[in-house]
Image (cartoon, rainbow, N blue to C red; front, side):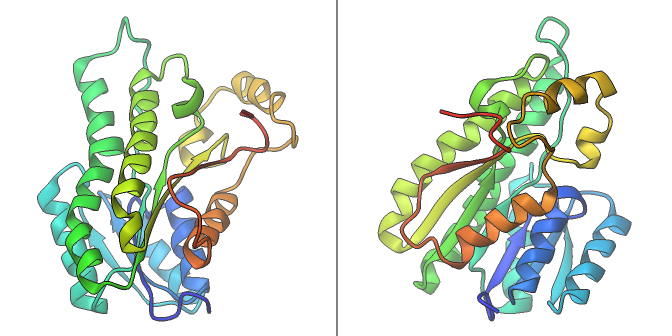
Length: 248
């Protein structure tokens, strides 16, 4: 129970990577604040899974694209558990289209949720994290698309690349306060978001992965826990969890 008495806020935790992260943190003893945007039924399933793993959790509906909602999210964490130690910025959406056809709303909505949403949560959590003077962990979920781009995903790639810049800048700002800030760049992960991709595209992507398989949400969750449990000398880094898809 490496995270006993720690409180973690996980955005976009109603399904996929967010749910796996919430459950893995709970397995390691953390209290988990499960954020969701709209799907309360799915969020309740995450809560059941957290409790089944032996953890304590609460549900908090909040649109991360709105700063006031993020402030309410962090307040709920503190009201229920007394503090916040870990922030996992995972909430994300896609609105894929080639730039020539991309509507302004498709561009802006992805930036608002995927990038500004992370900023809003960090902004809301900053004062409590600094005030308690016990350090902390911030993990931002980026994507390999933020490293190499993706056709038809200029909005998503821009947001996820922005997450990397935000991570590195914040890591420099908070290093002196014992708060580490890192990013994880998932590759092709089996989630509801990727389930809608055409079979031929899935096969093409699989052929490019050296480890020969797609990733699971649990692969990402285990990396999150690694960064939250120890990793005391790691900050400002981007860890690609992608089966070797992107190598530098």
